[in-house]
Image (cartoon, rainbow, N blue to C red; front, side, top):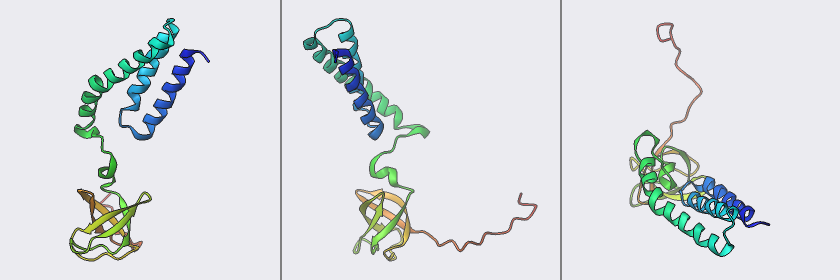
Length: 159
């Protein structure tokens, strides 16, 4: 396999990794690999391609990533990741949730998290709750009201 093709495969792997977590680290490693592929096509020896890859990747990480992350973390397109990204989602209580003296557990996306009731009232296991906020590594949750299947009738004035 030629050096350029090898670097393109490496770049493809980094692109796939970036799509999986969107932290903008692997993207710059992919750019470094593409830069090394161009160097390989230009006839640079493999010993020169490695530092070219490293310099391009590190330069992108330190020069382009910080302003990119700042831009992504403001305004309506704010990037939210990790546990903060779970706020507003529903979870299932797995261990009775109450107040600070009796924190419980909720399960969301296959993981269990410590949780407190927003009003201090106990919430029993099996109950669906809404995650209202994240405090440290603890979710503040609220009981989701049961829907009985009835909906209010709309008059012609409401439409």
